[in-house]
Structure formats: C-alpha cells, structure tokens
Length: 248
Image 1: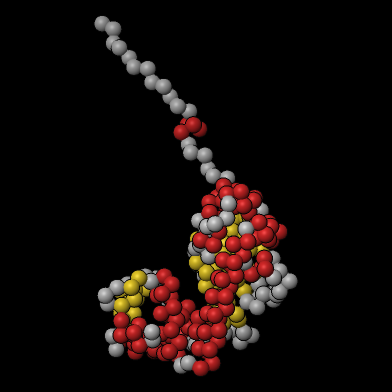
Image 2: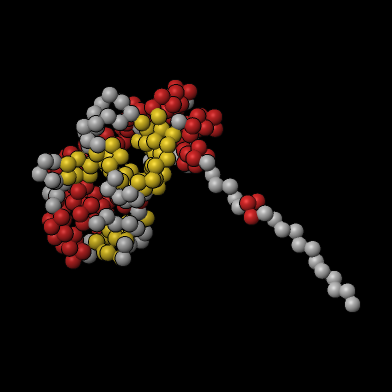
C-alpha cells in the first residue's frame, strides 16, 4: 500500500530573517521622530541622516568636555543627557537635562564657543550626532526649523535664568519644590490628588539640579513628606495639589 507523502517547501533561513536596518536608516528614523524636525522634508532628513552618527553610551560617559569645542548638533534618541558644571572642590550642578526626542543645536549655532559644562550621559543612552555643515544646510533650506529651534533656545535661556535666580534668592525648600514642579510639568501627569512624577529623581540628582548638598535635600524632602505635601509611590512621587496651588 502506497503512503502519500507531502512535499515540504523549505525556505532558506536567510530569507526568513528580517534585514537589520542600516545605520543611515536608523538615523533617519530617529530624526523623523524628533519633534523639532517635524516640518522638515523627507529629503532634508535623509541628508541629515547621511551626515549623522549613532552612538550608544554608558552612564557617566562624557560626550563633550567642559572647556572644549563641540561643533555638532546632538539628538537624544534614548536615555538622558545632562549639562553639568563641576567645581575644583568636586561640587557639581546639573544645568539642564535632555531626554529622548530633545535636539541640542548649540554646537551647530556657535561652534567657536567653548563649552561651559560637560555633556554627560545621566544613564545608558543612545545619541545621534549630526555634522554641523549638514545641519546648517538643513536650516538654510528650512527657515521654519530655525525659528522653532530659536524659540526652544529662548525657553532654555529662561529656565537657566530661573535657576540662577533660585540659587541667588530662594531657600532650599523653595528650590526643591520649584524643581519638582518643573519636572512634573514636563514629564508628569496631573490628577485629582496632584501632580504625579513617574520617574522621580534621586536625592543626589535633585541636589545637583538645585545647587545644594544631598543631606539638606534629604531633610527637606522628608519634611515635605511628613507634612503630606509629597507622597512617594515606588519610583513615582505625588506632588499634592496643595503644593501645586501655593506655587502657581
């Protein structure tokens, strides 16, 4: 008795694999997801991608050093990068922190200016560096992009002024509350109980951001928690409506 057999068509393993994206394709996707580049044409983004380099960096990696040159535009693809100033005595302050999707064009606008701070990875991150010539060419071809980045620079300057004013005029508690509210308004979620910060900074990070020592920040946060103005929830932190309203 003959037994019918089925014929199986074997697909080579190589054909079953999805081709890995090229570095240029990955750079293009990163650029396309950037809010600041939302109005740039596909051709402009492809030109930027051709002149860009993706880098994976570990926490604490210095992307560019204080006092040195930096003539590229930098896009944070994943993770966080901070601008940190360090004193000779070891103290430091985080001037700005940039997250995924943020585009930093300082080096493209003013390549001759020496950096007043380090660009440092606050956690394991992926960044995209775009050569200045290509970035400037994109700005000239897309004037509205220059206006968008100009408005962003004005906003950053205003935040730097607020930081300087706080360091000069405000007490530690006021600075702690102001910084937590700024983080909450940027990345948090408002709710009926208050403003929820989903990824609260550590006390050391908070101290670095407001120019205070960690011990003082720890005492201040503990006091605010005791008074019910802050409520830790795992990795999150709830800023009560009472605190939000008093600083509105």
